[in-house]
Length: 386
Image 1 (cartoon, helix red, strand yellow):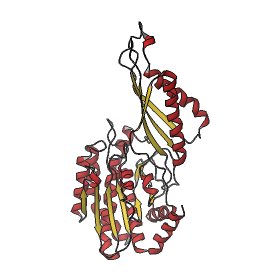
Image 2 (image 1 turned 90 degrees about the horizontal axis):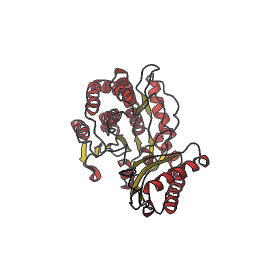
Image 3 (image 1 turned 45 degrees about the horizontal axis):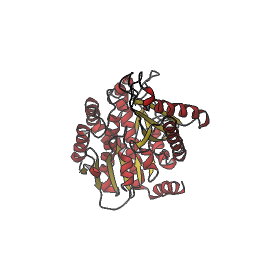
Image 4 (image 1 turned 90 degrees about the vertical axis):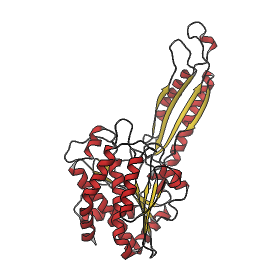
């Protein structure tokens, strides 16, 4: 089956490259991925998947299913395809979308023989709202045995950890006044905003060094001679532990409320999107993936340090999951994610070959689980224990 899987993937490799490049050439922000999702849906349908469009009411989400009708485990592959503002696919989601559908299609070629069911989920807006979180809340993963996806990166790395994250928007409302002739009549919303930053900065000494609080001021007044009536700040709060993220979230909220009391400004706090939980990698599932890649000569490094946040983290809390990385840079010169250099590296021959290896690893891992009940039992025992 290893040989047959490689032959199938070699045969569809040109199609997958065209698909990845098409998404690259048509970058779309979260919830606006109309061309990208349509291309991925059309590809799944061409290979016999039954696709539910506008899944859960999201215009660019989808759920593709192929069922052998023989019973057995359910394997899910996840696809992302949203881009970043101005810079396009600088996180490589063009390759994530292509690899997710490709792994599902590859497993489908063998599923009639071995049984089971394969699902491909199109998950919009990972960079912003994270529709995987909505899918978790809707129970989409309740009857899924394992969920997998892969992400382009600097190197090949095993699935590891991520930072839990909460996005906050804090709105301060004061009272306008002439800043020269009647400043005593005003309430300065910008002062409240700045004091919030000062409070957070004073707190940094006393939080765990693995955690992050970062923010910007998006509104701070309209004229220098008018006391600012409105100021707005946005923050992301991150920690390797979901519980500690929530502790820090409350501390940030208290800083904002205290700033409001100091200045007299009113404070409104909004969570601007879904909160992401930390990634809980299933080690047994990860080991199967790593072994499959090493069998075809791919060198894969241990998990990397948790530096970003993933809505896949929420999936991993309810379903055995992995989120490994594949390197897209040949040689020592590399560009960090969310840069033009990283974006353009997704259209190189080296990156294409690395993507195909990752697809093989995902597909072969799914096939192994469908064929071997004991593997799935080991994966589920670990998940249930955690």
